[in-house]
Length: 173
Image (cartoon, rainbow, N blue to C red; front, side, top):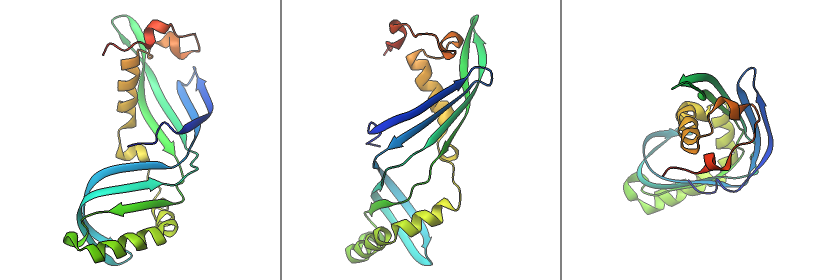
């Protein structure tokens, strides 16, 4: 994934009573590159393929991220443990390239990619009707906990607005 550094934080809130963080952000285009394998139908057309894919969600996007947690004690120190992450976003358009469609048939692949991009707004509207939560696909709570542990930002005293000591920003590798 690339492009994640191209964002603005619009708002950050933390409620120490409920232990809930919320953030409003703005992203420009957000590209993803990965390998894929599929067999299915899109608009009643059978689509099969295996290969490299490039998907760029076109911005601006304005996600809201809500992080819920609990305090846990480890060796006498209370830490913030993320229990749930909810990302709310409505992606309106995308650009997509799928290589290897239809067993590598270049003409069918070119036409399919053209149609996917030509009707990308309508496809995104259909997908958003399913109301898919990104956090259901990726365990964002676990990822958040790993990042926070690495940065040593999970101590309770840090979560209530106290200034973070610079030494705690240094990773141990």
